[in-house]
Image 1: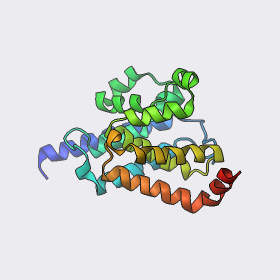
Image 2: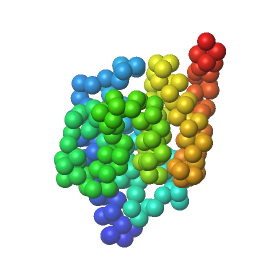
Image 3: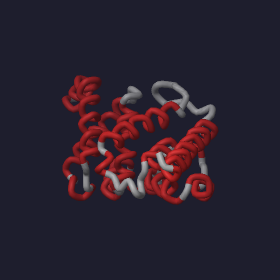
Image 4: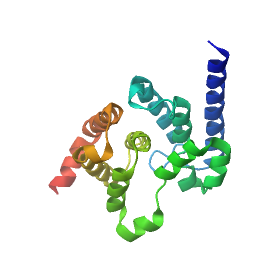
Length: 202
């Protein structure tokens, strides 16, 4: 390994470690709504999932801009603005412009949700997300449905799943997106198929 390559991996590892420590600090005391586990378990498991899919489908990403380290850091921090009131200026100073930009794209606008409604807001947001932000969002959804959420959330996820498949050109889905969508569909079908069927039959 060359010196430049060694430095690249060291700097990348330090970025991820810093993001992990920051996420643990900011999410301290928070718990997941349904599982009641410490909240930080969510971004950590989402990060692991994102990195595994990235490793398998790395050719679907522009690795000169989005490295696995940037992806990992952004996934670890994707909830800190929304859940912890961290400002984008602090994120930009600590983790750089690319990571901060991804987090901002993944952060919900509560005022806009109140104005147009959660489902319409989600439909519009999913259509507007770039490929990398959408990838992280799908990993986030996958992590959420594995957390055994309420029926109302599962119904919304099923709607989002079909919405994405109907707008593949708009969202520029790549093989990594489709792989996660398949896993979302598998988890929904395996764990909640009967519950969802009863809901729609009611």
